[in-house]
Length: 459
Image (cartoon, rainbow, N blue to C red):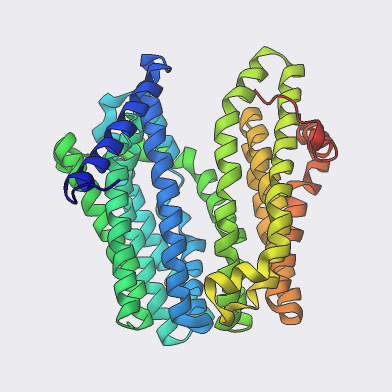
């Protein structure tokens, strides 16, 4: 059946738009009215995460193909180098500020102003520490320039305190719109740069410009909805209070980023940027699957927390089944990925990155530790074992560095993955043996792993 060109082209999108809107409204009818804003808030956040992840993957593949392993490795070396120190710029304040704003919005000017100044000071400390490390490590001049450009972007992340404000008000859609717009703009800029064969340093400048645009977007949306930022004020007493509470989170962040990023830095320093390029490509793919356990955790955490208040038996039962679910997800993802790794790498990135196929197979094994570590974090939070978590992360990062020094000269990138697996084995499993509070949970983890087919109810 044919129709007039014009009328059909317009009618179909309008019908689809109405249909999607009607479905969303029908879904809201099944949710109590008091939860509507929370559901909409989560929907915006989830959409932004999925969209950003997808765009980053597609554009990242395009960039990797253009730059080739050597230059792509250098770019990721610089990003990872800055990433290790990025906790200085956040100071672990975000969750604390969201909590305090949710408790008392009347303090918003003091809270926002004080945390903004603290984050700004933290980013300057980051630049100072990083500069000292650069001098000590004696990187090549071009590498140092890349690192400094990318690190400068951390200064503008102080404006992300606006994001905390809208999170506390359960109105994340405003900042999500800013983030989506900036992500789309920066992604388009990267595609244009590849098309015109831009030099490597331009890709570092895009990271800085994106941070500036995010800051301007946050400032604009806050001014539009709440008024001028000039009303923010710094409170010395509040600053001391925030820092006293946040310093363990800052230390934890540094250790966590070290454990996550040190492999690429050490590969670049001890071997070459080609190895970093191959390693980074495999890591980018595995990070996509790391999103799955996070979504599952956020979904089932409330049910497990509720069970703890009801009875220990129900609490243990839900934890056990949660660990079963996490291990089952690992099997579902890791087995196909292990055997198809070579084909996936060559199809997405080209033959130049074929060496990353073996690395991706090994990374598939590492998903086991990712899943079980995320699962274990639910227990850590419910039991308030944050000091234990800090100690475990610091020990894990230290072991990762030590084993990397031993294995990278012998096995190159494969040695870096083995080092990560060893450090995760110790920090997630072995250390539990030395703490009475975690031994019971360790039994539940292993019981869940060896009886995953008995998965029953998590909720």
